[in-house]
Length: 214
Image 1 (cartoon, rainbow, N blue to C red):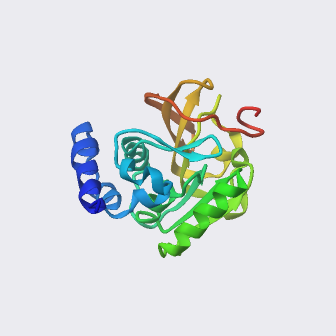
Image 2: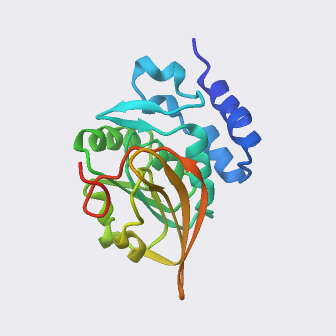
């Protein structure tokens, strides 16, 4: 019998903390969310490994460290409205829901959306809204947002997402070509946006009007 709670704690203690993730609320959230339920049964024993995992439809569940560092960069305190572009398995949305007031998540692939929505409801997350849509356009009706996280690589920061970010809000996005990107933190100020490159990364491409073509 696999002790998933022990694996989850080891994930945090061995992969996140030694690499500099310090925010207590982020570490606690990642100790709570059952990551193994967000992959197929045949991959559950690998769910807490230091790598990304396939979830079908050519998409992946990000490496735990990447989820942690992107979440920490949003600096969530608990009152925020957060937009996620790329629901995928729903794991990142669940981590965000532990830390924010409400999470709005957009996914272009209907099968992934329905699967994630069902699992998140089963796990009791009432502060997550999910819909099938072109993520590069955001979710204007529910904005503006205190934080926006994009879990796919884009050639540039989509203008509609900047427009849906509150002043003082933070946006995290991988920016680059189809095969390698730089994780980038964007803060919207009255004078414009402040962009800070964080480190190299590799994500699946962001498909849509303000991203890549298929």
